[in-house]
Image (cartoon, rainbow, N blue to C red; front, top):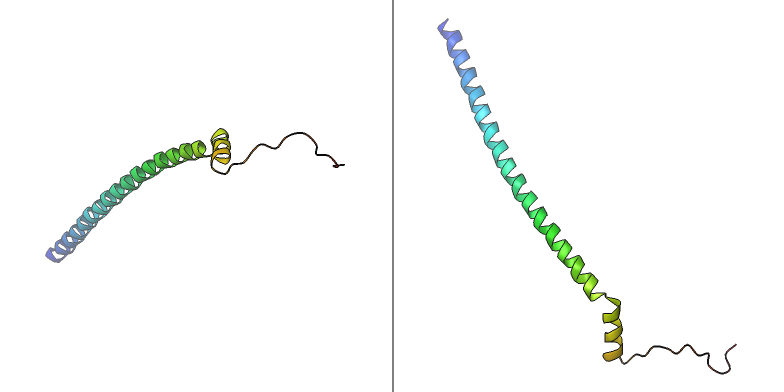
Length: 85
């Protein structure tokens, strides 16, 4: 009977250690998940800011002004040149 009690005690201790280990691992994984979710939220905010900046840089009047001022481009006239079919 003593031998059976010792075996059962060992099984209980091993199971308890398994539970503690699995809970610790679950907590660490949950903490890592929370960290990654926060990073994803930060990246979403940064992506939105970059999209806004890109739309500002690609604004048609801004591009037209730069083409006129820096590149000295002019808008073509709508008149048909002489000799064109």
